[in-house]
Image (cartoon, rainbow, N blue to C red; front, top):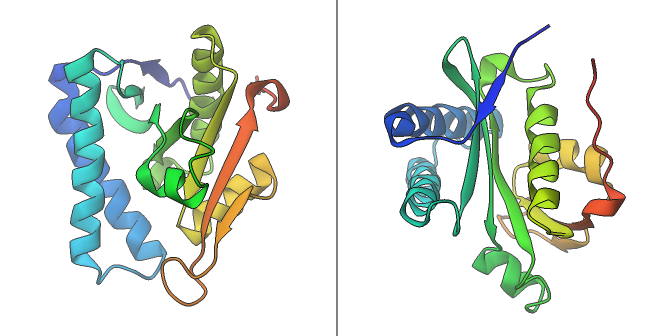
Length: 185
């Protein structure tokens, strides 16, 4: 059984987290057949770095990250914060005041081992502990969308062909009371 340490990041983790973002995002784009979209990859990495900086600058008030470590190496992360402009615009502002769970990343060598589920369940408990009752989540990656459909059911919003022909963007909104927290022991 894996022993994953989950904790808040500290400033000493920044370089390792930025490297982790680059690794996971580059791998994700490659698995989606989008490895040639170098500018998009860099924009995605930059966006995640900005989110991380917002966490440190506001002590978790604007963005709130958790990282997962295995043998002192970062193997996963997750965060929540305000819903993005894309979500707000696509839902005509209906999710403006709903926090978004995002940056749900697992190291390519550690995927399909339950680490993502662990991080998601810990985030559910974190949100509940902070008095939040609902969240939203979005994805434009087809592989991730299959996982989210399995976990959360059908999306509440689908932006048809948002990323090109056949490349939809999906948005889920869920009440925490409707999402089970399950830890396999």
